[in-house]
Image (cartoon, rainbow, N blue to C red; front, side, top):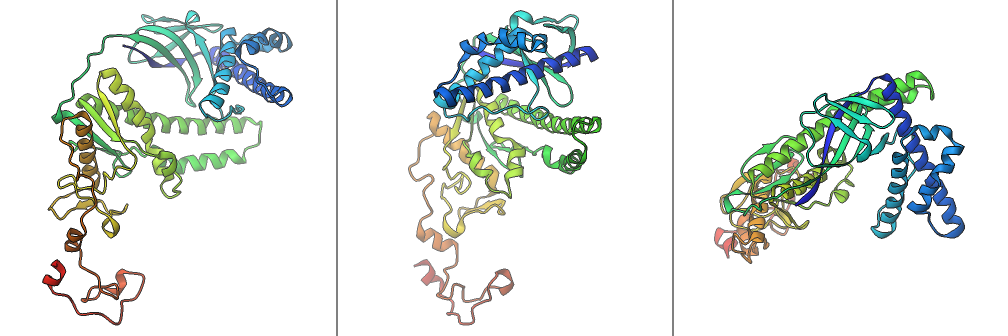
Amino acid sequence: MKYLKAYRFKLYPNKQQANAFARHAGACRWLWNHLLALQKQHYAETKKFIFFHDMSKMLPGLKDQYEWLSEAPSNSLVRVCRNLDSALKKCFKEGAGFPRFKVRGRSRESFYVINQQLRIEKDRSKVFLPKTGEVKFRSGRLTEGVVAGANVSWTGRGWELTIQCKIEQDVSVVVPKAETVLGGDFGLKELLVRSDGVKVKPPKSLRKTLKRLRRAQKSLSRRTKGGKNRARQARLVGRIHAKVRDHRRDVQHKTTSALVRAASAVVTENLNIKGMVKNRHLALSISDAGWGEMNRQITYKCEWAGKQHIKAGQFEPTTQTCSACYLRKTGDDKLRLQHRTFRCDCGLVMDRDLNAAMNLRRLGLQALGLQHVNKDVGQAMPERAARRKRRKADACGEASGGRVASATLSHASRKQEPARSSTELSG
């Protein structure tokens, strides 16, 4: 099996090397914006785009016109041409958005280094980069496989080296066993609830730092543009964002790794996250949780481990279905967001997220052929059983005993029908 694996190293450049990194990243950003502007102008005139071969042939002339462009590694500039070419093709072939200009201070500053110009000295914890020399780095692990390339980027708190390696190894396929198939339900109260009862608290990285971040951004907006104080405050805002990102990433990797390690097959939801974040009351919490990134990590980690990752359909009623008797709540019986406990006529009383995780596990077992598919599973609760569960309302919309007026927004009805007998209800 062949796959790509990335390793992140924290770099410790001296002042001269840090300035060189900034110049290299700035040159790549300027070249991207310059070529993108040429693309728009050329398309307006000829209705055609300029692709990689023609863009790369422009580089010698641009270096003669702008001498400072030669300070950046030539292969890094060529990589910019290739990235823009790929972005244009994805826009029209895969439906991705049209490439946008990169704004200084807002876009992530980075540049690419090819594998021929990269040399890692593991004994001395140093890496050799073109036109920079040896730079110290720190990492808890070292690279494996063949180095395909690397990317040097500014994270907000420092410079980081991401090395991409090609790894080829024999991965033994794990045969799923019913007792080790795990379902995972994503949530906001709990980041992940597993079918074996394990619950992971959400880190709430952004929400915990929101007050400090707002104060820092407000101070940044009041600083004079181009001044040193504004640049200093911008670095502070960048450090806060980097801390939030690193904390969230750490929790996500630990959670997904533990899930894949404990299971022979993993079943999760296929959520429509873009549609869910349109709810302005929950958008911040959903984005802060990072469900999409967790699903992505589970997918490739299962692939590396030789295990299966099954995604349930978006419209599977896992939250509304009883994991014991398989009856589904409908109508007024449906669980709302504020209902945290699932209760069923069969006697099941369970946390709603754990119940959903159990249903996901059942769907995974059926997909793997480890459990018989019951055609009645997921069906709505029969009307007769539903009538037994809730009291039948009278013509006034209330039971004869009368509801407490303070429990609803409307007043209790003044005219009521007499209560019906139990035989009448069960009939």
